[in-house]
Length: 120
Image 1 (spheres, rainbow, N blue to C red):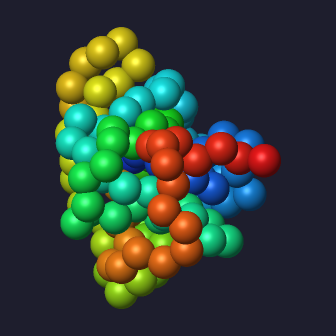
Image 2 (cartoon, helix red, strand yellow):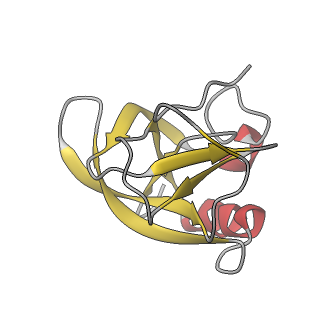
């Protein structure tokens, strides 16, 4: 993988999620958590809101190639529906690093009480 790109996912792109197939040949790095606090909402799918600070959000870290990142942009409707931005996350070994994450433009659905979306 040339110039791998770090992506933080918190919902249906996680392993076992129905959109995980969009991750292509991504390399799983482990579980991670945002350093800054945000808020998760969920209706049919979860979405992250930057304008509110409720809790650190937990998810998974992956390395992807540029083609996969562009596929993820298409899936997420970046930059119209969701906006991709870099945030600081704490990786599986406690290290701090930057990762791309998708934020929703506005909240809809139910505000989640915790910073983790469980795939059922």
